[in-house]
Figure 1: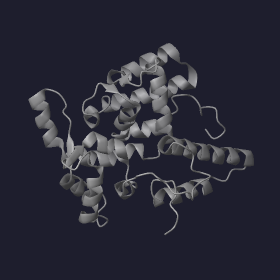
Figure 2: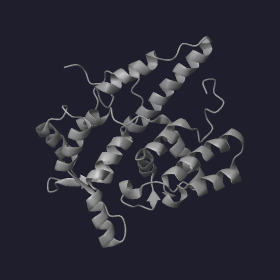
Figure 3: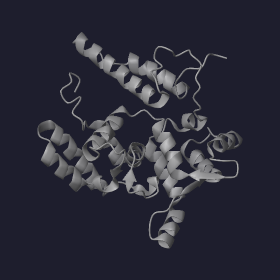
Figure 4: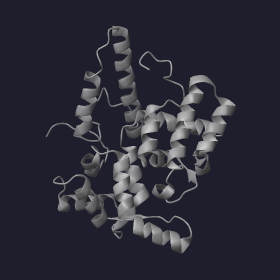
Length: 268
């Protein structure tokens, strides 16, 4: 068996090589070099956040990570597409919980539901027996036959590569959690709040980036809190999850720069 690499699956290995090899040819070699360096930095940040250290120089060291193959099965799909399929499968249950408790309840995911979703999204790639064994590994205990839908989706989000979204979520916490409590209010993730904060604290191109995000939030009428069990205080992981759950918000978060770090870079 080949020695394990410190990446989430084999797709990541080839993706990493492709990203490093497919930098657009530029007339300015310095610009091309800068772009290549930026890509490697993004990969290093991803590896550090998920693995605790950079694996770039130790790709052939054995890994102690326990990454479920379900990630590999679904890694080729947009996260918001996975979320749509999951939430459609749970919509009736969510409506019942909402009516009974007058609030969003905690949705749970059973194997049969995950299997249906996988056969819908990745037909001809799903072995029911193998998927069941991988699902059991994710369960909190042997006595349980389901897990929180929010935990499952967050698991997918945290093992996905979306560096711009990660930076922008960090920028949100810098703005709305100045004391470093580790949580922000879900009430801040609205168009009006973004516009007001940008008007008070920002100017120029950076304000424009926040205004773009505000426009996206206005289109979606805010975020969908079902994927975080209706929580009103959001951790960074929960914030990433709500922005990955909706196509419009995910595309916006991946295309803007809310901390201004790359607004004046040569490749921008």
